[in-house]
Length: 207
Image 1 (cartoon, rainbow, N blue to C red):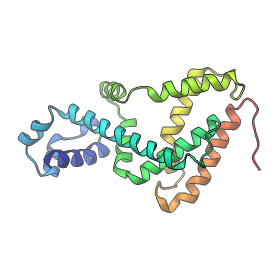
Image 2: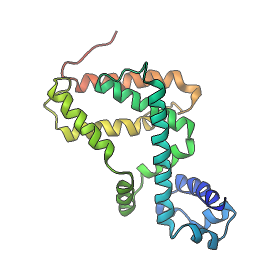
Image 3: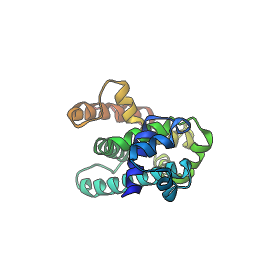
């Protein structure tokens, strides 16, 4: 289908270039279509970009929901840190399964066009922030988390932690692929332990 060819070429183009540098002509050429075909399906570069963001977000939700169901019996989600670990682990698995989507997501996170960033935020929504905001407030009230840090700060830290663990791995020289799974899981344990000992009301020490 011509529309799918355009989307596939666009994933490559936007995953490699900032929004302002991405070329519609390159997308058209790499998809083997024409300008007429492109504008039959998409009004502009912006509409194509936002459609890609929506498709990736929808695919990620489906993947994470399926994984949550599959791991429900053995993943510890009884604490906020157990939930954090399971979500980071699931996102790493998503990026391994869909490397093109992961590359696009990384590029979107680094986007410098302020208006495009605003539109992406509106497209994706703030559900992740709202979810953790409520959960963090509850854990502070229960004495699980420190109460001397602003909720907004802790929420942003959790959201950032989830979305940037793969960046951390890359900076540490650990490729996000299945051949590195043991090292990824080792680093994930350190990652969560570090957060827990910094944010928990009573820091713990693991043997």
